[in-house]
Image 1: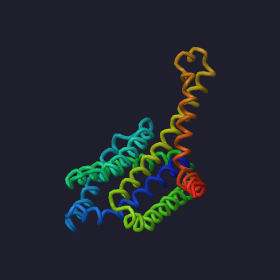
Image 2: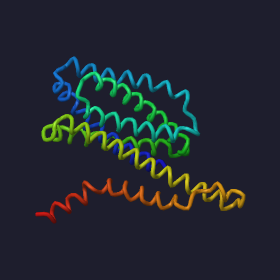
Image 3: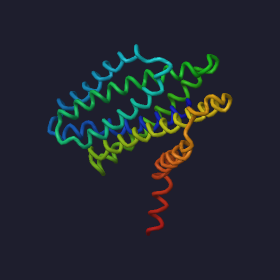
Length: 231
């Protein structure tokens, strides 16, 4: 579970790194300059403060759901910024994005602390933070060339797609986990057979897993292979 969360975070923060580099060019695209850039950063920060209050409502039963939904919201709002023709909706979307960011950070820390033994918690946290920081740094490095080649809107769209990909990874793994847990519970209790997982559930899970896997390997492997074959 922790590996899956870190993998989703890597995809998400890579997209965030791309989008952060595109903030200033996007503000200039709307003609708002440094004032607009300040409003964009302030909107995200205000959203983070608002989202932090959700920590009082999160507990063991809803943390995983909050993590998945928050990641979806972050990806969707980041992609939505790329599609906005006006500047005020950008600020509103950044406000929501900041709130979602705070929610998933709280949920992630809670799950990580609960599932990690005391003896290795510092090592697990250190390793996960290192991977996340590396992904963010790569996003920063590639953000400049991406903005120069594609423009700030397309860069934001790529960042949103990375966030949605992270959400897809979380959702598919969570679905497999729920399916396995229900199947195990119903296998030991014949009275549970009528409320166990549907027969089609593994088919849909395999299909969803294949889609997510294809998305993960498309850019580094499949797309480059197709380009070589088309030459």
